[in-house]
Amino acid sequence: MSEQTETQEQQEITSIFEEVETMTDGHAINVLVQVAGLAQESGKLNIRDSVLLAKAISIVSPGTI
Image 1 (cartoon, rainbow, N blue to C red):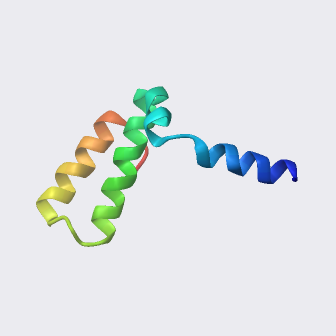
Image 2: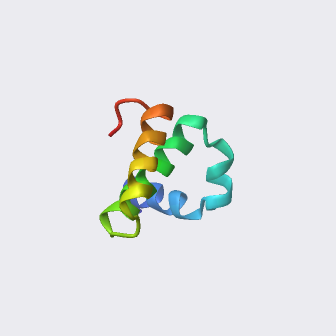
């Protein structure tokens, strides 16, 4: 078995619940920013929500949008 295949198998075994145990504030903000972007792109947010969200992101993570 190749080294790459072994690495992939090890990654697949790791539970998402184990992964989130090591989440930092920075990781959490990044996840929220990504989900907010997806919501915006898919049209799930109205203009008001988009403006509020953009302002909130600019406060907690300046320069990301």
